[in-house]
Image (cartoon, rainbow, N blue to C red; front, side, top):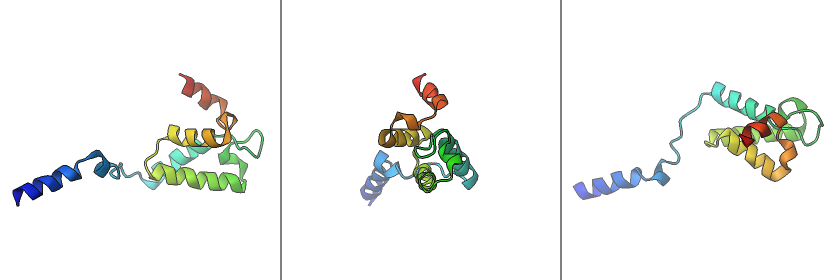
Length: 102
C-alpha cells in the first residue's frame, strides 16, 4: 500500500504532470500581456498600425489567439515568435526586434 502511494506521488511530480500547473493569471494580467503583445506586432493588413490599433477581423482573431496562448502558459516572446514565423519578421515592430537582438 505504501509503495503504490509512493509511485503515485512520483508520477504526480514528473515534469509532464506538472506542465499544466502554470501560475493562474488574473484577467487583468492576461489583458495587459495580450495588449502588450498586440502592440508589439504590426498589422500585416494595415500599414503603420499594430494589431492592437488596426481593428481588422484578422487583428481581432490574432488577439484572441494571443489570449489563448497566454492562458496556456506561453511567454510573450513565444507569442511574438509564433506570428513572426507565420507572417514574417516585418510583423514585429522595430522596438521589439531591437529588444530581441540584445
